[in-house]
Image (cartoon, rainbow, N blue to C red; front, side, top):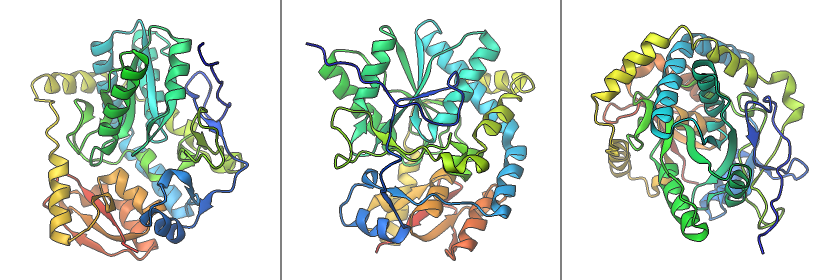
Length: 369
């Protein structure tokens, strides 16, 4: 007998026509931990997905930096969105396409790709956001739900950027396990706006540049927390969980963010086509060049656990917002792109060191406690 399909909770501040979160709302549970306490628990074996960091509330200066960054990068991000959307269309066609973004960094990117395809090809592609957790895989209940709604779905996974490529590998493992278990063929290819790790073949750019949504937490991600998998408070066969921070509505810039970027699509059409032509002449095969940089850093700084090294602008921002950083490595050639990193590091008294020998513009290193 087929198990009954469970329904997700309605959550998030995005329009439902932009995205449906396939998550269980666990807002009633108190599982936040302060950075230091959370770091100690993670380093002593508790899985990071069993608790949440306290949401960082940005200062006025930092928030105005987000708006400046959005002005400065909106065109560049819009071009990358167009480039990825066109590759997805080319690869899958549009007929049974379903966009599945990886919560939460992938969610605004999935919305933008959906909106680009609506703008350019006048189609409304279904878009869901699901949880994937390092070491635990993606949410199979969410994938079951998608196939229940769209029997012939051609799923295209979407994320914001790559770091070391841990999620790329996790996705491949999850897709293989799901196919073996259910006989449903899943394409594990991940599409991202920026691939500084050189670990995917569908990308907008391999430059490690700042995607402005990396600057903030839930207030640019539909007021949804990181995803959680904690069986002390959740049922085994249910969706993965997340919190919906309704109390942060006044600070929410999620819709402003996607609206601002989507308004650039018309303007950047020529650049999108030029970039696609360039990509046509490039070898887009993953070389995992980023991982080689990370291994060098691990060796030269004597870092015991490779998971303490978080390369790239997006990951370094996360280290500063919700982990306990030891130091930040910065490639001086890209310092102009790193104003928000320098501001956060100063705010938290984190030492900065110049480091050119990497394929990233910066790298965050977590403190061993």
